[in-house]
Image 1: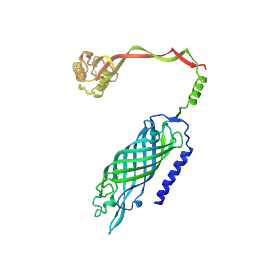
Image 2: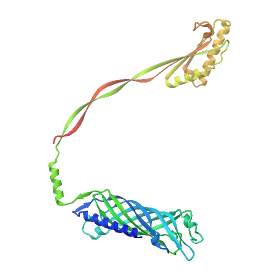
Image 3: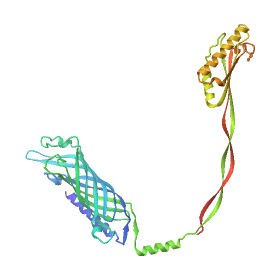
Length: 385
């Protein structure tokens, strides 16, 4: 405990030294003023044990705002290790557990509340808040359940209310150091014991606060100097019209035409249409092109069968090709067809003349693109002084 007492003595000495260097020079701070703080120190939860042996390290961080020179609020988080103890005629033991506390605190600056200025290098805040506390990792206490009948194992939520004070010293425009002492009252059995009233926890910490609002010079001399600087740095501006050249793309509409041809070959005396791959290609062509016309021509080879048989074979090949296309969704009105038997041989190789030739023609809108030079005028302001 001598170490803890020495720590608080050192903290007070640091605050006094910082206050000695802080200058009260008729400056004020803009509001609302956001801040972020971090603290570290020690805590003890009071119980019917030697409380000097139950002090443990603790740490906090917070963020909030001072809405006026007098009133502020913060969201404060504190936690670390905690200890409890049990003593009777038979046993004497201590146990450890962990805790985490979150609070919404109101902060009232007693210096500006009762003082005549909005800025002091050293401020004293009265703190009050409420929140929630959670304790866990209580295995050591739970192991002594024969003595600690109310020891918990899975963790324990508790309300939290607090009151305390903070002394804060500005050491620069944005940074201050502080010493804070608060007393938390928690739900009974927080420390695995029953007292028929809430448990009390005392927390003392040394911290650093970063303030996001800058100090502003409100003195009369400062205003005069600012006015003089404004006159000296008065700016003169003029306006002119600038011509800006740029490249642009001009599109001209045009009609694009497309054509595709497919050949379907057959075995001797075969007429069934088995060209699924070509059928899919025809469908894709018709989808991509508009106003399509499809022409179907069927033939037979001259060196097989006779003229009458070949004419009938070419007719069957034509009809089955037309049916395959219409079944696939091609409008019948866009199809023209004919058959020639062996009277016409489109290929020099005889076996290739057992064939159906499908020709599709279509068109679609397209655009010619051309790069041209254009210009525009723009009003430009420029400084002449």
